[in-house]
Amino acid sequence: MKEKQEQLKEEVKQLLAQAEAADAEEDERHGRDRRGDELPAELRRRESRLARIQQAKKVLEQRARDKAAVEGKSEEEVQKVQPADKDQYNFTDPESRIMMGAVRILLGFNAQAAVEPMMQLIVGQQVTQAANDKEQLTPMVETIEQQAGQRPQAILADNGYCSDKNLEYLESVDRPEQKIEGYIATGKSKHGEHRKPCKRGPLPKGATRVDRMKRKLQTKMGKAVYAARKCVVEPVFGQIKQARGFRQFLLRGLKKVQGEWALLCMTHNILKIHGVLQA
Image 1 (cartoon, rainbow, N blue to C red):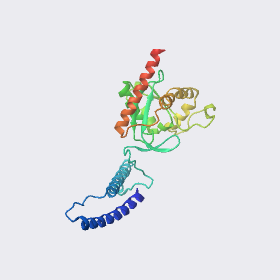
Image 2 (image 1 turned 120 degrees about the vertical axis):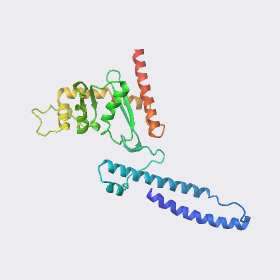
Image 3 (image 1 turned 180 degrees about the vertical axis):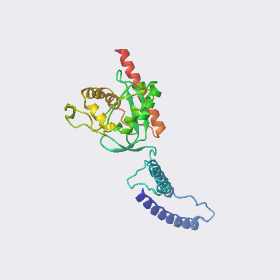
Image 4 (image 1 turned 90 degrees about the vertical axis):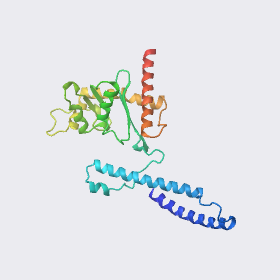
């Protein structure tokens, strides 16, 4: 945007000079009483693009300040923060964010879905602008309670949801029956690692919740429970993407995308129930 801004400024300058020369020529040819104050189409287009770039830069600056405020920086530091050179803005859909796709970085949204194990029904769904899933565990549990009408008894999740804060949330409840049994991967497993036997003996002093979760998933029961994730939630995303051909959102803006994802999840559930009734 910085480079384009300078280019557009120079082009606007040149077009203004051309417009002034054209005005003088037309005044001499047609007289000064003829209207000639309209901007040439090319100039209007460039000035419009320049205004959009300036507005985009303001948005990026505000995002940088908001991020600094969340990180706990002082008010003085927040006001001095500037966007990084790599920060980007999507002119097509300003509400989208940079996401890491399967094979490339893209601008989009983060679609979430929680699936129950019996019929593969989606019991909780939402769309966020978050680039990763670290902050999504707590909102998803609350979403499941709201949309499915009950609190989950256990959760299987990949390592994207693993953090000490999230594991603490699963344990910190007012009543024992509210506790959620968590099976959350602590990292990407290396090839053949799941076949290694669980280490014996107590965990070292000062072990974190993440350390305890890692040991839990290394046990025979932990491995068996977490392995069920491959036939619960992963097939659902496969069915949506491959069988139904849904590879990208068709609408723009967070609210519209949330509605599109909700409709897609609802039709997934209808298809699943229809399949059971037809069996």
